[in-house]
Length: 386
Image (cartoon, rainbow, N blue to C red):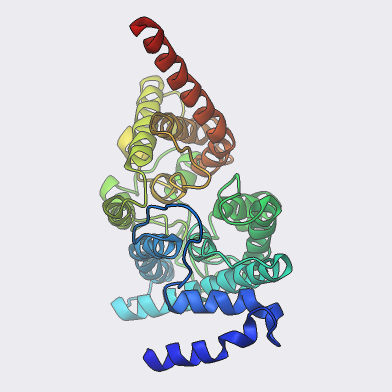
């Protein structure tokens, strides 16, 4: 590493102001800070610093996503061999899933990072590390058989419309990964819904077992009126069809432990989302007039993208609320709206993503009222004491 550091220091002047590669300074700086801790220092004022900069924060989130990613790779192979009636050991399943998932990740990162570099060069700014997380989140919320060109188009939409038009990382209103999924759902619904897109090869009819259905648990509840073949334990562990990284609630909760332990993710938001969803589902259970209302409340929390959204999407520090009380309100409303959309709109049972995008929009308003309420209470206490 010392030799690499010396080489970078040697060529660095060429990329600084006055150097022959001055216009590529942002690109060079991105690679340097990826390899080494930045050596910049503050020039004015007093600052309190700790070891958790943006690069470490983003790396922690990616690490927390690894359990869901690894399980998603295995499950992609498992669901394929199950659908085709073939016997396969662990490693063939992993290999099949890897060959399906890895290209999606490459396209996501490749498209997004190229756009990030272009905008950084045009603006003369540093390349932010925010897309390190978005580039992994986007593949994990997509079906395994999604065409790669759609991944590229959705990623470009998310980065340009979701981030760069607002000023880049830290300025966006909505979660970019959710924008990518919402864009694909409304622009190419045939590739984001139905029974044939969640299992690799099912849409092409590659020797599928007679009578086999690739419907997700929520899809089965809408079409057939029950989820009997998807037990609560299988749904919790993730042995069900679904988006690449969303099926295993266990793997997602392992990621949640990492986020909470490191202080990167807000446990208040996670807890509130689950609480809101559970209470809303209990209310619908009491009514029970439709198949989706009859799904047990606990089962609702481990189906679809609910857990993934609660842990990795709702807790996005840029698009979520900042105040302590606001986090509880924000998370609770996401949980309530997720189940409400799921039940009332069978055409889009995956309501958590729309719920989070909606609450992203209202997050600043929630914080505003919380802050105003705090100010009024303090003024009232001050007047009483006086």
